[in-house]
Image (cartoon, rainbow over all chains, first blue to last red; front, side, top):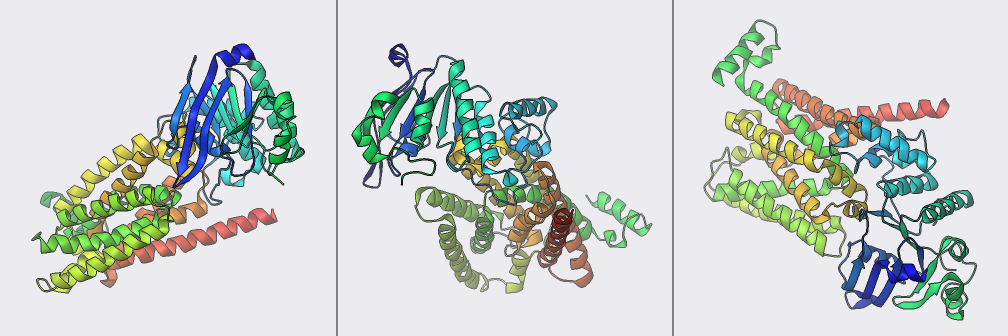
Amino acid sequence: MSDRIDSPLLEIEHLAIRRNLEALLDDVSLRVARGSLHVIVGPNGAGKSTLLSAVLGLIPFSGRIILNWSRSGAIGYVPQSFPVDPTLPVTVEDFLALTRQRRPICLGLSATTRRTVVGILARVGLSGLERRALAVLSGGELRRVLLAHALDPEPELLILDEPTAGLDETAGQWLEDTLTTIKREGRTTILMVSHDLDQVRRIADRVTILDRRIVAEGSVAEVLATASIRDLLPVGSSRGGRR
Amino acid sequence: MTAFYEWIAALARQGVLPSDFQYPFLIRGFFCVLVLAPILGGLSHLVVTRRMAFFSAALGQAALTGVAIGLLLGEPLNAPYGGMFGFCLLATLGMVFVKRHATLPPDTLIGVFHALTLGLGLCLLVAVTRQFNVHQVESVLFGSLLTVTDADLALLVAVGIIVTALLVRQYNRLLLDSLNPPLASVAGANSAFLEYFFAILLTVSIIVSLKIIGALLVEALIVVPAAAARNIAHGTRSYLAWSVGVAFLAGAGGLGISTKLLVPTGGAVVLAVSVIFFITLAISRFARGRRATA
């Protein structure tokens, strides 16, 4: 791991984000090793999603965020929430085709796009759901669709914001297995926010505890053993957040 | 164009086309509907997806103020496009800018603009009616086929082509941005650009529709076709097709009602589109009931 930390994919230096006069993040410095699965944990309101938004370039910040791309420079993103209007007639294949063909999807999907969509849905175990409306998918199915969207084209950096929040045991386990497989393949660096410390222990390479500033950072064994973490996030806190 | 109108009128006299097509204003109106349906129907499904229905209503009111400004500045009564384009674009840019930079909910901010433009419009209309008979302004408020000219139709066609061409280029990004702006940004879309871009396209399309539909009623043809389409569509393609289809049916139906009953075109079109909406709602309920019992 130390070799990989020497050539990190993502370097964050003295990041600060303010809203009005409130500091959402203050002097955050962090390095994410290439090919690793790096998890950010912290209490509600700690600035975890804000940090991801800054990395994605969605909000203004001070400090530096450096991405040392070596391949495609593609980022895959799975947002924390994806509210879908229940009457919206957009199907799974429509959604996945949005970034995969130039022709407006309302004029139909090309044969190539259809083949691609079938392939990426099979990868996340959702074969046959192409024509299903997004609005009628279960929370777990929707999360898989979002992951399918994020994984094609193969990202160099995959960012997930609490991907297991609200999922049942089976769906959570499936996601965990998928992330482990992606990590093992070694081509994608994963940066993820999680509340589930048990899951963090099982899959993470490194952990950062964030509470508007960096509280602790290091390997899972080092970080999750300290007392302050138990104060921030009681051990056993599971999906759904801090108790 | 005169020769073309005479040829259509001859077909109507021979019974090939309905007898109403003997009148040039009606032929012109029908072609306006033919062009308006894909423009407004196409925009409609994005307006509803992007939750811009109230924005469209505010734009209609802004157009009323724009007409008053145009007339006060000396524009002709049958084509106050300078005032309408100028004021509506200003209102659009103002609404989008404030929406993007303020922390208040969008509908609250649009409500403020809505009230402001309407208040200003009413004050200016009083000034306008000192120069014109208020009935002469009614055509812009409620729409009238009698005042539509060949130049209006040409402008409608030109705007339709430009809007369609621009929309085709950005459609997928606009839809993804409507579903989830962060995902669209990660995919390379510029959310701010898309918001201004779509708002301007919508503004221009609304302005060129005003003489047919009317400032007070244009919102209906921007919102209801997509609302009706949602009741029966099963994918993005059918959503667009139904939106355009409903807009066309409402336009053609409204034109027929307006001619037969001598009522303003805008009102007749809105009545027609509302009836279609309730029919699709009933179809949707019926289909859902059948699925539930199956």
